Length: 193
Picture 1: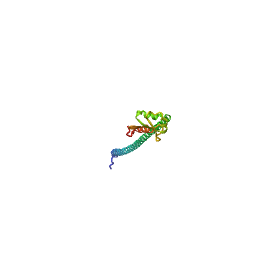
Picture 2 (picture 1 turned 60 degrees about the vertical axis):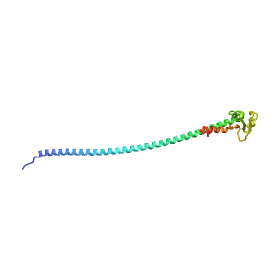
Picture 3 (picture 1 turned 30 degrees about the vertical axis):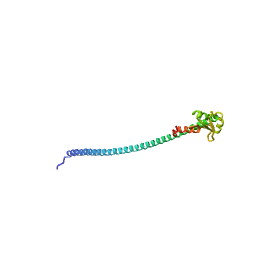
Picture 4 (picture 1 turned 120 degrees about the vertical axis):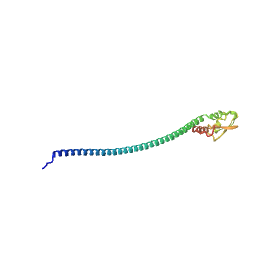
């Protein structure tokens, strides 16, 4: 009977087994590395997509915020302009009211002011008639320059005067002067010289 060589065969078998085991580990390792690389690439792509979507969302939010800021700034500018215009109009109105009050007070104290205003613009010899409020006409009757006819006119307020000339007239009414001042403040001269 022949006995096989178990030792030699066992050693060869052991080597083959070890070689197969190493090849198996190597193949498994390589396959695992491929799968890991593919998985990592998929994860990276997914993360990149998420980052891009987040960037787009942030840009959209920033854009919306900028639009809201622009709208608020435009609204504020409109309100500021409206308020400034209203303030300017109110200031002009109050200035005219103050001027009216001061003039009314001054004119009550000095009825000769109407006569002086008219004669400041024209030679007394050119005045054909001087129309005045009846109270002013009575007060100034003895003080009028020679040749100037004082005519009471109930449509005129105290301190107002209208001088009638050979060619035209001089409107020395306080209200007319204030109207001219109002137009000048508004930048509207109404075609008047």
